[in-house]
Length: 196
Image (tube, rainbow, N blue to C red; front, side):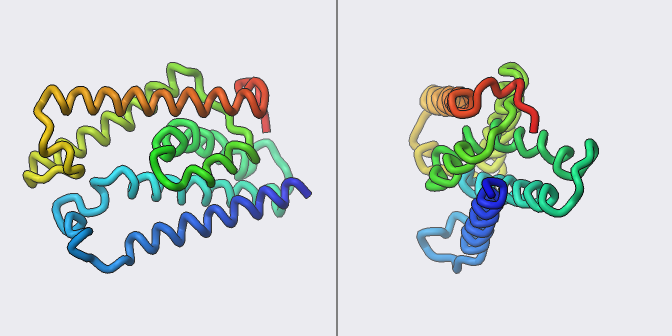
């Protein structure tokens, strides 16, 4: 019964994430959202990238849940192959980055209802650093290629201010990663020993 409830929660989260993403993409352009018509479009915003990652995460969760329900358990099953990518996407990308958006309730539901195996701290930090550096490089490239900043505050900050902002943002993402790891351990025990 608990597995079916978790499947229902994942399906609802996937449908909500898909709906939110489709509304974001399908929303008519307005003067307020004029920057989406510029170089990089919606892709220059971390919130949009996170919406895509969340939709991907919950889609993988739904596939895993349905595989558990309808495919006989085998060692090389679909669900066992999808667990490591699901855990990586949740622990390294979606949870640390997603805490700055309104999707927090869905992420907390996922954290509470479904254990995730975190990578070693080193591998997790490397993954988070690669993502953060890639996004920062993208934001800088958008400015270099088009002369616009994805976030208006970057227009008024000098180089030292930008360096401080980027450093603080990186430290906040690390803090969120460690928070997710700690909450997972608190709720589910030693996550490194967890086997589904």
